[in-house]
Amino acid sequence: MKAIVVMFDTLSRHFLPSYGNDWVHAPNFQRLSDRAVTFDTSYVCSMPCMPARRDWHTGRPNFLHRSWGPLEPFDDSMPKMLSDAGVHTHLTTDHNHYFEDGGLNYHTHYTTWQYWRGQEGDPWIGDLNEPQIPKGAFGKNGIYSEEKVFEDYRKVFPEESDASMDRLRYLTRQDWVNRGFMNVEENQPQALTFKAGLDFIDRNADHDNWMLHIETFDPHEPFYTLDRYKELYQEHHDAYDGPFFDWPMYARTNDHPEENKHLRVEYAALVSMCDEYLGKVMDMMDAKGLWDDTMLIVWTDHGFLLGEHDWWGKMSMPMYQEIAHTPFFIWDPRVGISGERRQSLVQPSIDLAPTLLNFFGLQPTKDMTGQDLACVIASDTPVREAAIFGMHGAHVNITDGRYVYMRAPQNPENKPLYQYTLMPTHMRAHFAVEDFYDLQVAEPFDFQKGAKTMKIENVTWVARDRQFDTMLWDTQENPSQTVGLVSFEVEECLKSQMIELMKNIDAPSEQFVRLGLDA
Image 1: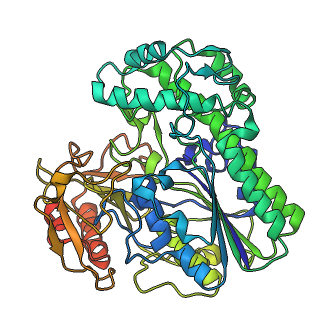
Image 2 (image 1 turned 90 degrees about the horizontal axis):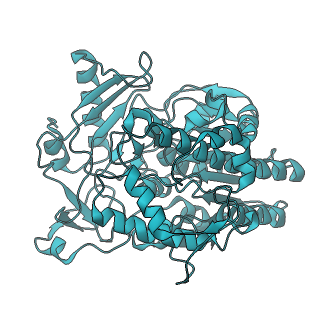
């Protein structure tokens, strides 16, 4: 048996025709939905990027114990388990967070791997000259002016701090440098990522026992595409008369209606590029006759807000449906079901590890709390009643597929809150020295195989979204989440389920205290 996993970063389901969108050009996502099983009740688990990938490897939530960080020494790794059992696992990716301090050991758990440079201000090309605007950057040629770009950004984000703007200034300048070296499509990271995946399939189609993981950072911001994708939305693009803008901050958008419209078009163009390369994978499966023995999985880590709820981004705000409710597709050659939809509640980031292990005849470990989705694919047999999701230090959320309950910290200090780790790094840096002043050693949680960890209070790391209240939503009656639900009965039921699910993953005791839950 063989498996191909295509992972997009920040793919919003409401931009896909298979989930009801009628203006984004994405025929291959519709083609996929016609060929595979489409999941209608798919939710995130640990947020955002690297926490979701730790879920993918380990088959269990990690956001209650840890923020963004590497795999821990006691973590199970599904790709490594497959590799150790003789299933060749290959990763091709342009996701630069794998190669920063906070993601430093995920790729090494594959048998082989490839990395393609240039996404999101990747510190790639060293060039101190004035960056050139590449052809197709936004339909024009010319000389980049750093001060002009930041003058435009200040118009959009007048309230943003100088420190944030300095960070954006660095990333944006480097991004423009990188764009100058990928101004033809075949040099762009997504194109290179998929070409490497297609080359792997072409070389190995006649072999058995392999799992290919094709992961592109797109359509994550910045929403950079060349003209041929923008031309699909020429009427929308021509209507915009504001400053150059394809990289939103995670910020409120109340005063930016035109920028909201423009960003949706820029994002749609990048979704169309993703659709193009998804189609190449399906074409290769057709050409090589792989549908008979090859599982195809297409998923994402989370969605994105493009003006909905007056926000851009993710993380800084509650995890509304646009972020948490994700697109998800599986073709399973064992049952050969095409064009059907499934309503059972699933969480791909934790469910795919047991699903793939069982597909290759291996057993999940006892620490994996995700579920094998074979029965959902075959007959829509439910595997859970409820699912928790969230980001370390923020709301803890739970859904039963209809109701979403967002439990906020119960005090303004958002304490107690600790990191449990033997790998003390954040996204792009180590923990600060002062984080270790009051270091404690924690007794093992039940999934740590007897290993003690550091217990580190959040001194320099600031948890987001603590300014929000507890909220309850009926996403069936109010899918846009504009009016909160008041129902003591529903809230108490979801609260009880939340406590049980937190116990099942051996959540730290202080998380119950922080949330005001009676464990």
